[in-house]
Image (cartoon, rainbow, N blue to C red):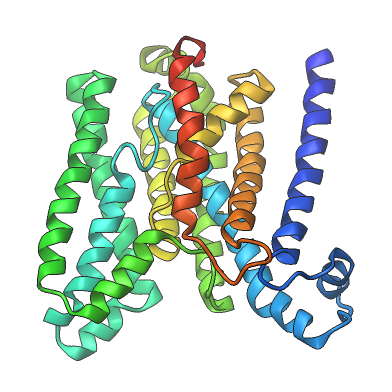
Length: 342
């Protein structure tokens, strides 16, 4: 009863924190907009200045929504990976999923010049990039699952993910050698990560992919709890392990693939956020972890967005750099406290 009350209080705090971070993300930036005007504009009213209203609706609001989608999607995909492999260091980026998505997008962006003009237009469209990114992350995840069945050594799986990352860098280097300056610039900006400059139609595509991936993930809550006790025990409880693993693979691939396609490879969110949720709620029950990870992912991503906007300056830092600066110390601290991993 005490734990239930404590969890309720924590979720109330997280809800208020998410709302505050969402409004702060829209309010802060090179142009400071009062929270009152932000709230008025979002509720159908008019801000004190028409320019503020234009900035809110066309720039700040889409960026804040993208941050929530990216934070929740990457965090949940990290939670799924850590439970599936029963490895606290598993995540979309560590296991090579982001590398697979990056390689596919590199082929699309840097290799489009070798295709006929009509095919180049198709593959460089938002749909083409999403399909390529999801395909790349899916292939890598399937490879990881197959190898994990043979090796049964989680450290070897992580090393394989790192090696695939190195392989990806090598292939991308070859592609960049034969690419034009315009293609290189486009891929470089994409690889730095960005939450801005998205049209509402692009956000609609990303929202559909993330919400579909989250819906699949939510259906895996019971299987995830069973997997905590081991594959054999889960089977003895009547769990169709192959079906559950396939759903987890598909959900993770859709989440990490679509997010990487639009926002670029964003590090550490998928790795660190699930542990923050576990340490805060002190539980391994995925009914609680799923929702707490959603909240923490959105809040932390919004905070990183606020930092990257450099409030008061006309400079916007790459979001991938901010998540790495914030996330790396968290991962180091978790490694030091490794014996406390759940």
